[in-house]
Image 1 (cartoon, rainbow, N blue to C red):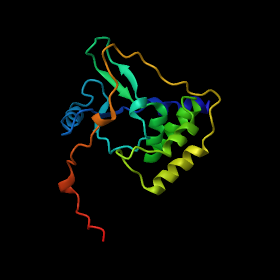
Image 2: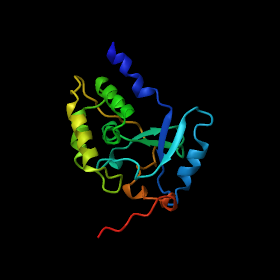
Image 3: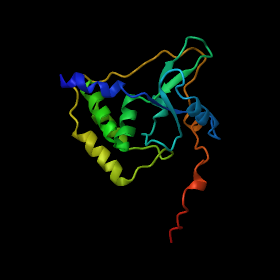
Image 4: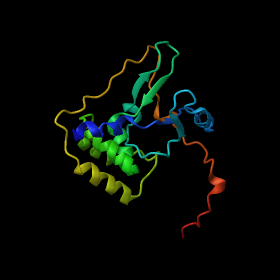
Length: 187
């Protein structure tokens, strides 16, 4: 019964984090955040590449979810579940831990695979403190392996559509730089 109760952590959030490719000025991100969920009830948050700690190779593992069948239709490229677990384990909030426990209990992921990936993070993304990384790895290592393992997601990508490349996810300018106090230069 606890397994069924934990599943709501996988589906109850109405938040959607969106990272846009080819957006050097951050215009697409802010436009999405401004429009966010007006008709769907979801809260859309524009994020940039420095928001989450992600394992090396995450772009190569993105899972395609075509939103319609037209050749020029929108494709949502979603994080592969093990990469998502790395990001959420490092974020380390209570809601992240609950989500991870539910995903493991539902046998959607293998925590050992996420633990393995957490050892090799993409240096162009958010870089956690050593303490945050150690806490995330300890948490992932404490989880039991599911009896049935996640098999991977494969969605059909329409012809003439290509997977995003890592170099398309560039760091936009820091829009809040002028609001942050200046740090003294290390000596």
